[in-house]
Length: 255
Image (cartoon, rainbow, N blue to C red; front, side):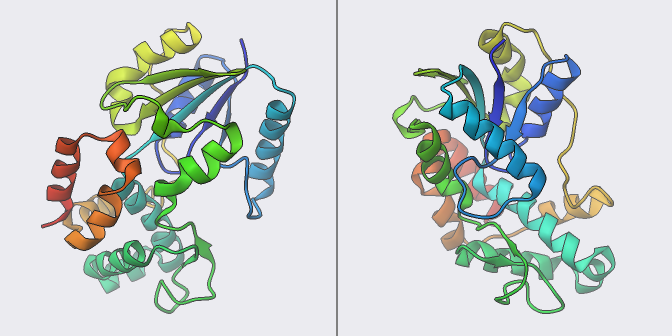
């Protein structure tokens, strides 16, 4: 079998696919960046170099990539940094409304530097940074297209379907996080000829110590309409989601 790359933005559910393959004895290489301007941790840099060499050698590759609702993804990404740097005790002391207010400031300003909380405001310049809140909107142009030469926006819109595409030595499968449970088994069988169920492995989310607190946070999150429009009225979201799906998501967060 040709090598499998799971190549996608962080916090979109790729660990479930990696677990599905691993549980069936199928090796894969999971990574977020191949064309990267920033320094990566050694573990991620090793994966990046391996994938880069495969592409340079024009190896035949099976590549799985994913898309996720940008607000859902960003809430997950935000909570990791917020929890890691503040800690559970301080989160409970400050209250979840403080977390919601900080989330909205992060979503509103986006930018390339998203500092962690270090005893000051989460958005204070100069602290350890997260990825930009706008990263989901530009990853397919900035990273995926630059690396592979594939413009996903010229492919059919998924809208509940799994997209398959061939480009030179690359076989591509695009699946939305929201469609994993419904479509993954049939899609992966078509893609690599194996009948696999979806894996059950969580990413390194910051809520693993106290998941109920994260669930409470998600239930109470309120986001201004102007901020939602930055993310939902964007070509990324308009490509991967129907108008009705977008309307439903706006109603969920704009309370």
